[in-house]
Length: 285
Image (cartoon, rainbow, N blue to C red; front, top):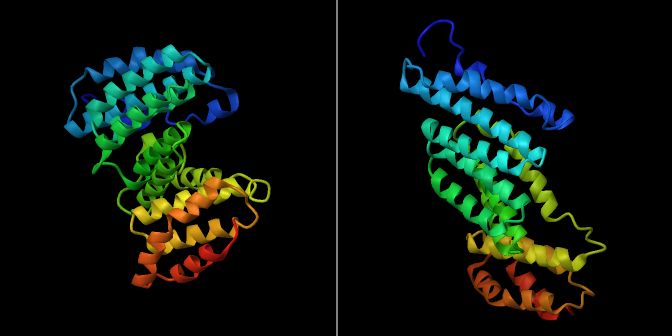
């Protein structure tokens, strides 16, 4: 951007909603909105010294629009929130039409979830994942998968939710690029993924053994589908540990459904497969 007095993209806009977590979304709302309208937007029509500087400026403006969307959402001003989220998406398209724009689609997907528009949320986050594929760093992709898992869970599609959660963990394991500021606004990706992993199995196993049993069975199915045989056997073994004394047709059906896969695993020499197959044949469920 021309002129020494112009702010750099790194110095604007405010990049953290931490104060809002304490004081609420209404804190500083009018100030942030005025800054976007009166200061940020005119800057975006200026001439930039390079394409990179221009992308950085639009990216920073998109973050401010996201923050304003979040503030309005926290106040239940859903119409205004969506307007700012959509503005953030348009600005992100100028900065990075792949990963950053996908992140703004994620924001709209989260709002749709809160408004009980579950199928719309799922469509949005699936579109976001497609847009970000091959462009997003591992941490940002992991957070997109977490939203995908939430959307599936809201539709009671547990197996798909588990698969999305596993995809998040896989993405998080990639050590490729640093996490960008726009997704760091939600905090470290590792904490978010682990928190959702804990929530996935948050039912008290002593009070709700059937829920845990079916959860571990679904998880094992997802692992098997990803050719992660050792981990699948471990998950199914945990399910079987909970099966004793559980009178549930769904549990019996779930256990019976893996017998063929276990036979294949046993022939391939997958550790634990023979023992698990034997246990399923003899345990009373």
